[in-house]
Image (cartoon, rainbow, N blue to C red; front, side):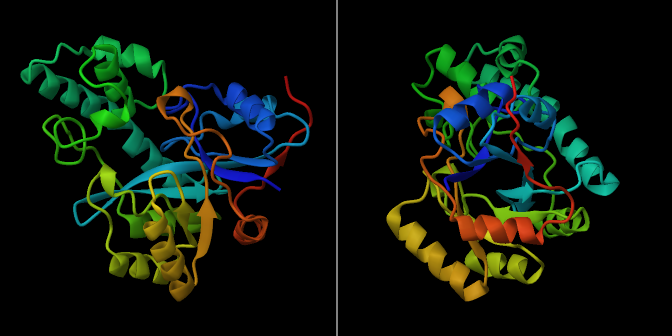
Amino acid sequence: MRIDLHCHSTASDGTDTPAELMRGAAAAGLDVVALTDHDTTRGVAEAVAALPAGLTLVPGAELSCRIDGISMHLLAYLFDPEEPALLAERELVRDDRVPRAKGMVAKLNALGVPVTWEQVERIAAGGSVGRPHVASALVELGVVETVSDAFTEEWLADGGRAYAPKHETDPFEAIRLVKAAGGVCVFAHPAAAKRGRTVPESAIAEMAAAGLDGIEVDHMDHDDAAKDRLRGLAKELGLLVTGSSDYHGSRKTVALGDYTTDPEVYGEITRRATGAFPVPGAGGA
């Protein structure tokens, strides 16, 4: 089995629609794919409708969190999407994305960059607007060469010249909410240092004690040393180890299935979840 547990669609900051993402996952030879758009499950219904036979969808979301001033992301799988408390928190985070993006546009304008909110809004195309959309605007204007180049202190990285904060959930509260909704929690790309400061291992240990299920180890932003260190930490803390592409379509160079999760780990995730179930494809459009 080939299993990719971290992918984004146009429901947040990917460039493939949920239907296109499902067809692309099947074409890439995947058996299981997770849709983990930022703070939303809005793309799941379209993904289910288009799910090809032979491909299983894991509904999920990537939750925006912050601990001790450090931004982090929590992958939540197979939770009840209508559970009121978690739904309210996701909506609070999502609703704060627009004023945050407008704040970044204003800071870029003050730096002499002629980006407009209308440009960012067009790029977002109705998805949950985020920094990648602002970064794409900078690429369009020729300010930076790639989206990744915009995530530096010069521009949009945490604490960067054009960075603006948004509401982000305390990870311990996020873990509690996801668990209460029957879901499973995995810390996304915990050693992605090029994105900014990373969460210390002591805090990961505290999260593990609070119910964190796993950490994403095999990821394009982790070098071999980071992967080895994280595998050791996971073993020490009794955490599951996942791998995934963090696919965003044309916004990143990584392809679907470039990094995958062991089938036994996937099986354990499904065993722990009680809020929702993987959806087997029946041959969608």
